[in-house]
Length: 267
Image 1 (cartoon, rainbow, N blue to C red):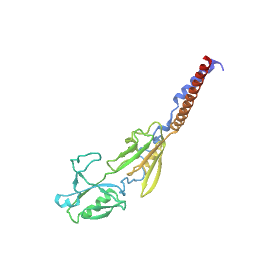
Image 2 (cartoon, rainbow, N blue to C red):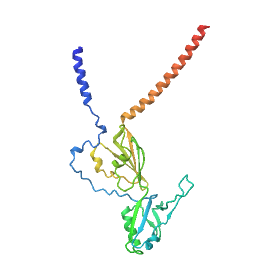
Image 3 (cartoon, helix red, strand yellow):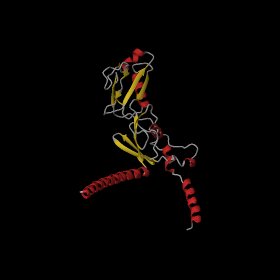
């Protein structure tokens, strides 16, 4: 092929390659094909209380002295590694035991595992009402956290101050996926009454927004696996390091042999 003919062909190929885009990193690619408001099944995202949860429970009312018996006392504590007791008293939390129970003042042992925060609030309000007029019960799950691992910018454990955390919220708190994260196969691992549940999200599809697993539960784990480019780079890096090490060894050996040969010739 002549050079004059080859140049236009190469130019055309360059233009086509410049327009090629990688849609594997774009979220919700089919969202434009969806209605303006995506209707999904109603999702109750409220977490269920489980063994080992830590609960803050405060009972208040118009008469503080009347509800005092239902509240844990404030206490100062010694922080790990510190020699001085923390001066600001804190409220004790209730630890749900392996049987799903807590030992509540006056009321005794209560089985609360499987309840939502609102359900437990209603139960305690009813029971305390037998002793106090118009009590107000405030409950918070203090150890609500999820872990985000893999190809994200800030992997680790995320503490959740409220009960509503979506998979997108968790990924946002972890700094979003890196360019090497596989957006079509994000794994969710959930402990459900001692059994492990698994679900996979395709973040390139709008179907993620209507998934029953869209809202996370306490102690959920999200894992973002590396994409093909990252896996390929890892293999190449390992192979490249081996080749460099091998070449360095060969060069060192040749250098020693050359030095010996020169020494023998000089003699």
